[in-house]
Structures are given as structure tokens and as C-alpha cells.
Image (cartoon, rainbow, N blue to C red; front, side, top):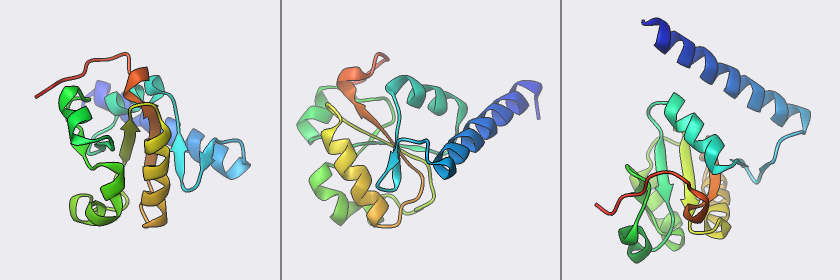
Length: 135
């Protein structure tokens, strides 16, 4: 393992331990079985992590007009029908966003109620200062 990869793993482990400590200490903004963080915090975790899913819960039309590269579309009103088909690993890290943050919070809560355990909600694409694609 390269030194750079080792540092990334240590940093990610530190972030996870810090988050868990905050949760158990009651100092987290984790609510309803998911954690809400800023777009900047989400981007940092994405850059340091592997094997995650970016879940866009907007409509297909919104998704087609611009989305985060690599995002998977499941509209918020389809979470109950499609999540277990499209998101098979309930322990996988899932980053959830919508346009402004309302639907992503609802979808994250629904995923948590379905047994998904590693959900990070980061608001809306309107607050995403990074690249979007229209592929």
C-alpha cells in the first residue's frame, strides 16, 4: 500500500471515528437514522472514500438538466419501490441530494426506515459548488 493511500485510509478512519463519537455523545446533527452534512464535507468524504453511491432523488428532468458525475437517479417518490432493487447493500455509504435539501432529507429518512445504515444527506445541488454533468 502506498503512503498516500495509507494517509487517506487513516484520515477516513479518523473522520468516521469522530462522527461516531459525536453521534454517541449526542453532539451530531444525525437525525432519523442519517447524517446531514454540507456539500463541502460530502465532497471531501467522496474524495477520500471508495465504493459509495451518490443518490440523486430529483425528477428525471431535473437529473437530465445537470447532476453530480456518477450519480444514480431514484426520484424521491420511488424510493420505497426501487431502493431495494437498485441499492442492494444496506451498509454501503450512500450520499443523498436533491435540488434544495427537502426531498433528500425525506428520502434519507425513508432509506433509514428501510434499514439502510450509512446514509449521508448533503442538501441540494443548488449548494454544490463543484462540477455537474449532463451525460
